[in-house]
Length: 303
Ligand SMILES: Nc1nc2c(ncn2[C@@H]2O[C@H](COP(=O)(O)OP(=O)(O)OP(=O)(O)O)[C@@H](O)[C@H]2O)c(=O)[nH]1
Image (tube, rainbow, N blue to C red):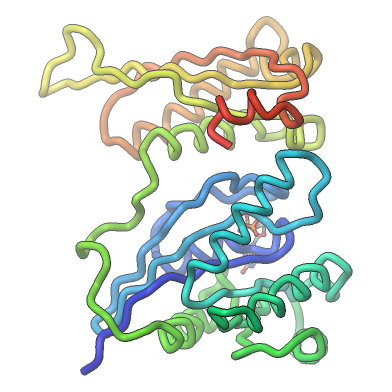
């Protein structure tokens, strides 16, 4: 039996279902999903362990037209990631017609497919559960006319439809080689990044329209609480939330701090589940003016 191993990543416009698909393949929640675009700022890897292969998924941010410096950096990150993987999955949500955003990405990908590495691109019709047979057929036709794909696979991460098929197709594009990570490993995302994502997710809940891309979350410190014992461990987690304006700070904090308390409670439950220990979560909201356009601030926040 030949063993294959390698890297795959999903691209697609915001909300195409990339994170959800990663989770469905890995079988556990590693990447944070959300109903709003561009929440996946960091490269999160999920690892699929099979008897015949190991597939390492690199979950990239949405490839989109750069509008701000942050956008440009994200796109550079995306392109760097794309040239390093063995196969790219291009996600196109079935409930939406192929549009200009998809065409833009398709152009970038065809450059890649013709480049020196010749990375194969598998087109994936995501969210197939949301549409009927006829619409799905139309969608697949639209996708086939969009470019020259190694394969086209309809899937639903929600219902599980064809997730196994997609897994086989992706694995088929990997080179022969030994496992890259020990079995049981699901992600090598640093814990601090996952903690920050949980806080960000909670902080955006219900106010995503007001604070679309203006929130950055950074874990300041994570320390065992003084006096906490091995039987009853307790972790002090201090997190900074950066917004661009005072008005946004007010939204996060809420009347008399009520909203921030809810954010803290929700995030804490997620963090405790992630770390398997009790957590004291200390949230600080700060204004970093126009951080999306300032290289120094971006650097400090890890972009
Ligand atoms: N019905 C249905 N909904 C899905 C499916 N996959 C994803 N979704 C929903 O679509 C929305 C976006 O999914 P994500 O996985 O966050 O999309 P993404 O491409 O990672 O988004 P960005 O991180 O913004 O680029 C979420 O509300 C998901 O619940 C699916 O197979 N079926």
